[in-house]
Image (cartoon, rainbow, N blue to C red; front, side, top):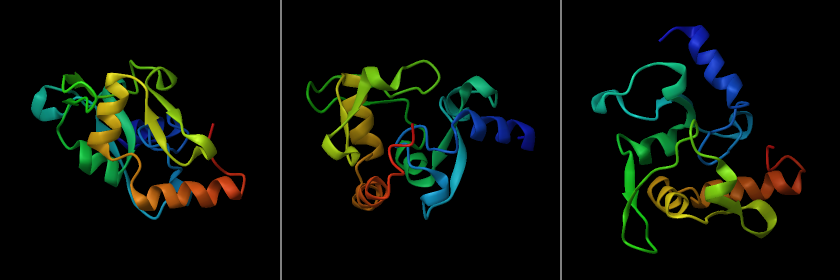
Length: 136
């Protein structure tokens, strides 16, 4: 993948994971360019199919494009940062430390990608106290 394409993905995401919204400059983990629809499932390395992702979200998503909504037991698509609107699927819990899924897609994504991992919630808490979170 060309460096110019990687840079465009990072800049579009404002240097934040497009799933958990952790800011790369405050995270202790590496970030990668993630295929929303994995190559193994026919996805392409084109801008519309790429997302900036922290390594943990990327690892939890792996090659999944669907997951079970824990509220209904239904299999639904995971959140797609290119076609879905974040606020239609997620909201911040009080104090901006936890992401709450408010739709089947949101709940399934929170669960599958573990968007409220302990370390991530703790980092958000510190950043909120410092006035640096949420990022947008």
